[in-house]
Image 1 (cartoon, rainbow, N blue to C red):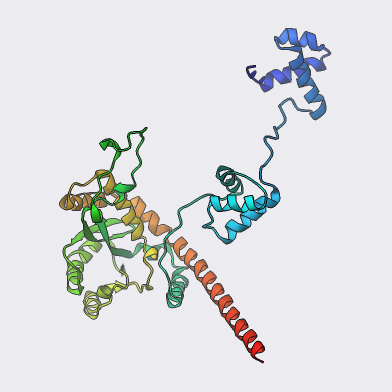
Image 2 (image 1 turned 30 degrees about the vertical axis):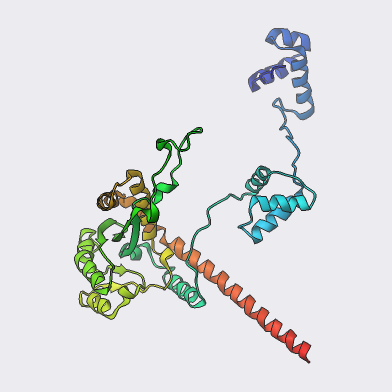
Length: 359
């Protein structure tokens, strides 16, 4: 039997109004052209609940009990990398059989969503303290301070880099040339680039030919750094940022920057994720992949074209949100310190127990 269409709220209210006026079910049904049983059902709902709309339907009962939900939430909270299959097996061992889809729906209902884990550098204790020190020192800096920073870095661009992650719409023609991405070993070759940007936009993008040493790096800075600062109208008091690569921290490089009165932002080691230019490199690689360069010269040309096309608004937004990066680092540093303290106390406790056993 086909499902009938529900009556609108206006029709339901009209039925109730006619009933209040003293009309019978049959009379109301004939006047409105509805079934007597429908009229009766609407009036009964109104008498019992004082409302004319349908009550919320309860739906199918939950396959996972509240205790089971608490169990999987506890597992995910302690081990975020737990897979849905792991949770299915945990519930199965507890006597509840569900599918991975049910697990996913339950986690989403509890406010969780599946995300790609962020990749961050593997930090030693000294790196953690240095990053935390940097974050604390600059956490209260105004946005104007970061606007004066000229961010820089090097990156590798592969000829067939992000192309390999493309998705296609197809049926069963997986190996149709239209549905495939050509790949070669080692990405088909690559080029190295040096680039810089500020809150006002992108600037010079320089191709590094051969293996870069300190002398080549100083030459790159000599040809690109001050022209970039002038083009971006950095004004007085601007600050240059580069990481702690040995070529960057070499004595000759430091002296060269000092001679030109270029102030350098002190940078913590092992902190590429603190540099907003990493977001710019990702944006550039996505844009270049869409253009599908044919060779390395074509790759260089497209990189420079797309670098210039990145809107200044994106650059400004990255710098404006820089405080969030520092806040996150402060929180992570605090957690690392707490964990270190707990582990240290645990080692002391174990040593104490061993001493008691020996006694």
